Structures are given as C-alpha cells and as structure tokens.
Length: 278
View 1 (tube, rainbow, N blue to C red):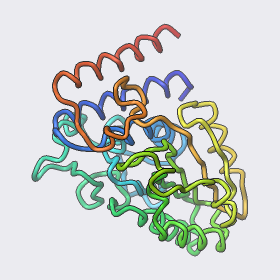
View 2: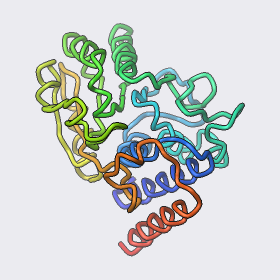
View 3: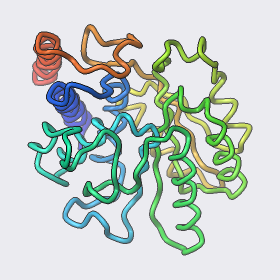
C-alpha cells in the first residue's frame, strides 16, 4: 500500500474511533487517535495476517499492551475485514463482540486479551520466545503507552527479551507524552526512554509516529536487525486529528458528546479532503 493510501486508511480509522466512542458514550479517544498511524501500518503493510483465516499458524502476532486503546485496534480489524464495520458502533455494549479491552475469545483477529497495564509486553515476549524455540518464522509486535512503561513488569520483560536476543520482537512505545493524570514526565518520568531500552540490549529507533516514511523505514530496519529485539519510540500527538483533543490529557478517557462528535468528524473530513487533493 502506498503512502497516500496509508494516510487515507489511518484517517478512516480515526473516523471509526470517534464514531465508536460517541456511540458507546465512554472509552479512550486520546491514545487511540495517537496510535492510529502505527496501527494502520501494522495491519495494512507490515504484518502477515489473513482476515479469512485469523488463527493461521504462521501469522504474525500482535499484542495491544495498552489495552484501553482497543477502539484503534477494532477500527483496524474492521477496516481489514475481520468483522463487519457495523460492529464498531456496538462498542462496550453488554453482550456484544467489542468490549472495552480486547478479548481474544470473543473478537476475531485479537491474539491476546489485554488491559492490565504492563502485562502485554510479557505475553509478546513469550510469543516471540515460543517462535524461536519452535523454529517458526512469525514475528511479534506490541504497542505500549509511555505512561504504561512506568510499570516494573515492562522492564523485567525487556531484560528477558534482550537476554534471549529475540530479534523477532518489535516493541512500539506510543510516546504521546500524556497519561490519565497529566504529563508523563510530571507523574513519574520514564525518560530517557531510548536509553533504557538500549540498556536492556534492544536496538532502538526513534521516529515521528505520524510520518509514514519514517514508520516504514523503522519497521524495515527492525526486520534487518539480527541478534536483538527492536524498540521503536514513536513520538505522537495525543488526540491526533481532532482539534480540541490534541495534546489534552482530559481526552485520555472521555467520549465526545453530540456537538463534539460533529466537530471531530468535520476535522477528520477536512483531513480526508486534503488527502484527496494530493
């Protein structure tokens, strides 16, 4: 998929995110929107996956460690064809497929239930180790939040991954700088993030997480890196694409009302129109 198509797809994912959260009247827009470009690249360019065969043995695995941004994952899965897009408007409804955090037993395409922050990377590391022990070719990807990496379990998993030279593992940190309580560096600074991963024997790449050229180059570099896992530190904007949500910690976990929904969708329509002019 070319760069323009990826940009258009990411914008469509953002529309899905806003629509599903508006329908649910609750959820987490800020981090979902900041990760939409990375999620788009993973599902529409990088990963070996097949919506017609979600459990195929050689598929690449994805673990959404920051499970509260499930709307971004659901948007990607629906757009990819794992289930009808109409399901997105049933987000968080009792008895429906798409709950507030990913459920591997209830949602096609979800490789791991997640949501308890800090735990997803451990599962991803286990999957990557399993591939090595079984001499399988699949790769494993996980997205963490920058607030999430304040959890100690993240660094236990990183230490093990580096020690075992898991070069089939890619850890993406969605570094939007904000968490539920405010700026990450005010709450409990995780910086310097890159140096920490380097200390655990990771190959580290820092990029603009909204630039598809940079995203493409980073994932290609990760594939070429042998003998160590890769951490991609993606600098992003919380609430990306929606004017009143951008860089606002208050939109970590709040759904737009009817008026805000109209403004948000108008913002994203403008982005789409601009992309159509390219």
